[in-house]
Amino acid sequence: MNNNPNDNNNDENDIDSRSIHVSNDSHFAQLEQQIASQLREQSQELLQQQQQQQQQQQQQDDGQTSTTTPIFTNNYRLGYPVHIMREIQQSSSMFLPPNYIPPRIGSRSNEPIETAKVENNIRSGVFADEYPLNVIPVEENNNLFMNRISYNTCTDAYYENGDLSHKYLKKWKQGAYQCDNIETKIEYDWMKTYLARSPAEDKMNDDGEISWKFDYRNGGYLINSLKIRLLFSTFDNEARIQWFIKPLPTMKNKGPSWNLIEFDPYTERIHIVNEIKDLTQFIKNEYGFILKAHLSGGEQDNIIWQKAQLFRQDWSRKLARDMLVESEDTFGLDVKVELIPDIIVDSLPILTDDKSKESFVLNDESTSDFVIHYKVSSDDNKGNESNFYVHSKVLSKRSDYFNALLESKMIESQNKSLTLTDEDINYESLEIILNYLYKGELPNIKTFDEWTTLLRYASRFLIPNLVQRCEKALKGFLNYDNLNEIESIANEYGAEQLLLCCKSFEPPKNN
Image (cartoon, rainbow, N blue to C red; front, side):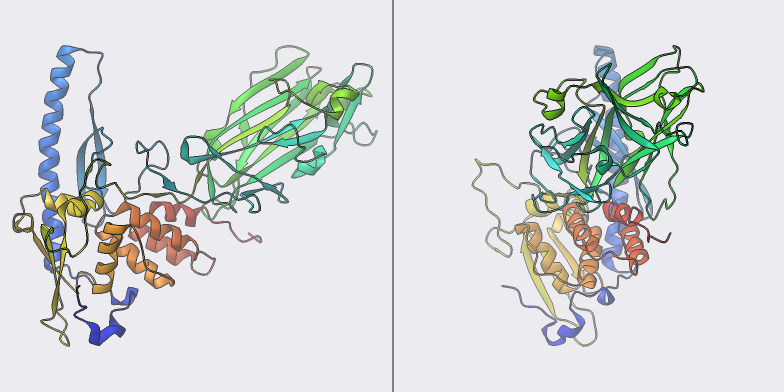
């Protein structure tokens, strides 16, 4: 068991952001520069190999695609551009910059992803600023969720997630976020029902407007895709229905603009639209949106209000009581939202397959093949040191920094040892990181400063999964008072998911 060389000075070694100091002249900083240089050389070799492979492949079959993908990125902390050629394999590993965050969706790994749990008694979102939205997981995809809200005019009810046996809301107006000069109408002669402007003499010539609001901030979900079925009709050449959508206000966009949803132009006097629109481009990676319909115009007569109709459907007393089967005509409004967690935490890479009998224990000298020497350079404890006996496979598999170091031709790789000092990292943080690499576990970290310190070192040693754990914890501290501070921290340490949470934070209501 290792002994903390600084035990007699514990007050200075708590995980505290004030205890962090990295000298640009330290050996560790020089080592980072050497790793960057080594990677640039490797990337050039890989680039040449790819070019040769592409030429050979093109000669063999022009229709085939190269099996390598170039990745251009900047290591902002080292200040150098890094060009990495990565084989498209599940088991591939590569050196990543400290601002790297794994893709939020479409991961090739089948490993479980840590996401917010959906419970029946917890609001995953809010509809019309009042009613809870229930987000459900997408089967066989651990980082995708969905929510669906549908409205049927005949039953005058909203349904959630395709459940026709239960009415989510029983009246059209309950689900409306805002509405003006809109009413429901039943034509008993034609056996039709729809939403339209008011037939009152003092309102029939006025425009009508209705909107619906979807907010998934409570559950911590971002919109990955949005498809909406819209059914609407106009009955003369002067009547118009326009649809708009906009994201919810955020700190980065406090006054979002309406986006017009485009449809084919009117060509006939009677114009009926029943169409599914993919509106992802307007609200991707947002916490929510508002959808709005605007009804206007029509030839001047006593039924001008009737010339623009939303969700016109067949009506009968039997249909109005119950709805058993869904078809493409069931819903006049059908909103399908695909969601992802705003902070995704990937699991640590698996060290061995099921058939392997390898096991790795931190500080097991009998099986260790690499040593981390820790030295104290401060005057009070100068000369104190400690050793961590580790395994190259664990370090390289779970830390992109160590992976690059161990695959390099540097003296540390040749000697199978690395020396770190208290100027590079404090002892407690190094111990926490090594234990995490081996067990995937963290101690009971409670304070903002502790998580910030851990994020700094997770970024320095290029451990994406640990960066994500820190992001998720720090998001819980977000408020208006520390928003700028956390955004600065996220930006400095490459915590891109946390940075997006800061920029997407809900602005104060008075703004």
